[in-house]
Length: 140
Image 1: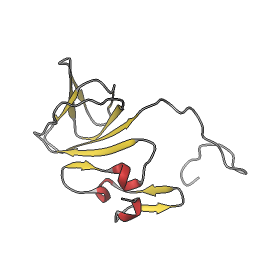
Image 2: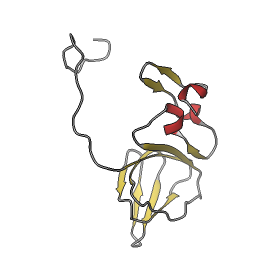
Image 3: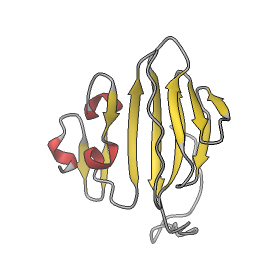
């Protein structure tokens, strides 16, 4: 499914922009990769209601990075350890490490999961011809 097939997702020459709500509704997976046309890595947003937990899973090759946007989750690992992640928290998990996620609060937890393999690309950002590289204040 192309990004343009999602109402509420704007696309242009080389980009796509959308809100979580434009990628689905209710609990479960929001297919960010498909919705925005991401091709370089896997990425999903998950909306997990209170009292819900996933089963254990692991991957063959894909390392994952989790980011908690709203609420709180607990990640239980195959060794029995448990980590609580509140809003703004990150967790990196190796492919072969078993993990299980549960909503640790009383509101919907919303977290982003990004997966990939084969390493870091390195700094490859460039400034277009005629532009100078800088950070500008908004409206300034």
